[in-house]
Picture 1 (tube, helix red, strand yellow):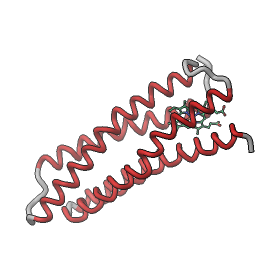
Picture 2 (tube, helix red, strand yellow):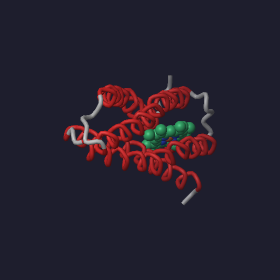
Picture 3 (tube, rainbow, N blue to C red):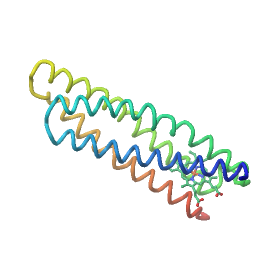
Length: 156
Ligand code: HEM
């Protein structure tokens, strides 16, 4: 296998990890939230924080590296239309993902506190939940747009 194809395989694995972990986390957080059970929410949010650290953060760091390697080997300058658009969208994804990581930590702690003190989930938890949910849409839309740009490589 050539270096290019090896890098491309790693790059595509990175894309599936980014998309798959994101979609999985969104689903399991939603399922936990729907129980309204502070113990279940605290546990799920805790697992989600670990999953984001191991899988998402690693893929977030490696994706631009494998991508830059591919661009170099294929001879695409990074300011090339679809590549530049993808990089801009990648910044958008990061701008929505970083606050989401913080929100997950806060939601985990608020739910753990509610479970430990046998009290109801506080209004701050529900505010964070709505914001967390809303931030997922632009982030997912941007990831899908990047995948589309990478696959179709439109000339504009
Ligand atoms: C962050 C900076 C990124 C750079 C510089 C970059 C660069 C590249 C380049 C140059 C290719 C073309 C390889 C070829 O000519 O066959 C490619 C392919 C691909 N990229 Fe990226 N990429 C980046 C991020 C992403 C992200 C975030 C995703 C998805 C989550 C992604 C998904 C893909 C996929 C699926 C392909 C394969 C397309 C195909 O072979 O038809 N890339 N990338």
